[in-house]
Image 1: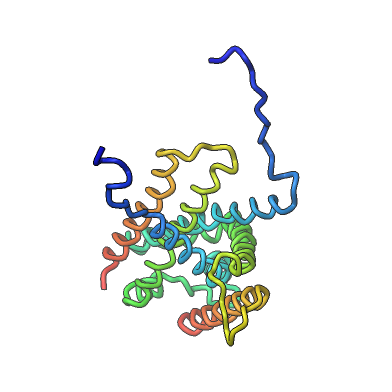
Image 2: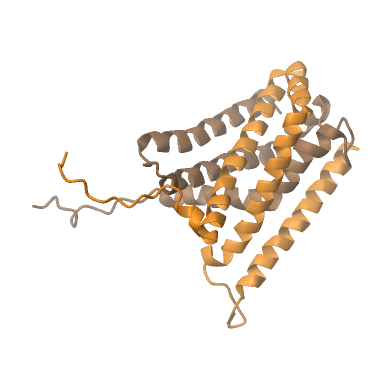
Length: 127
Length: 132
């Protein structure tokens, strides 16, 4: 009877990690999301307020070639994905979907895959 | 399987009956738009890493009317995310006490929204200054 739940050391929960990623991504999306979407999705493509070549290849390579630009991209894209994955995972129950292992794999696995792709692309661009 | 058919309360559309839950579903739904935008940026980054031709292809796609329409929708939903994020923040963060008094929820929400405006203007100013 020595192997009951009381005698085993408490298993640490991994929830704070995912909640932390969700919170960090949510905060970044709240603070910078609207303006980022405006810049990359509307202003730069239309040449509205910004120069028409604002997102030219040379500009973007200079931006992502710098360590600060790399840090910014590596903060924004993966954290947006972790935020969204966590929120969608926890909302599945509300729309009547049982959140099992498959849902976990899609939501968090997708965010992890996205993070790895971002890291790979940034390394490929080089310093 | 039991021969009896016990009553199961139907739950489809439960949230449509109460404006509070409608609001809840919209702000939870904003995550889908955050994810979609994250994927758009991810694809752009991969194109950038592939070289100039791939990048210009992504850039041309961003100029398509449907892409612009999509980004208008994302802009609306992500702005709603900002608003609801800071509206809920007084409930999700530990109580903030300054000078022995608990900071009012409206103050926290207001400070968050003000920070969003300031951060947005700084970001736009930086991008404008770096690309003009």
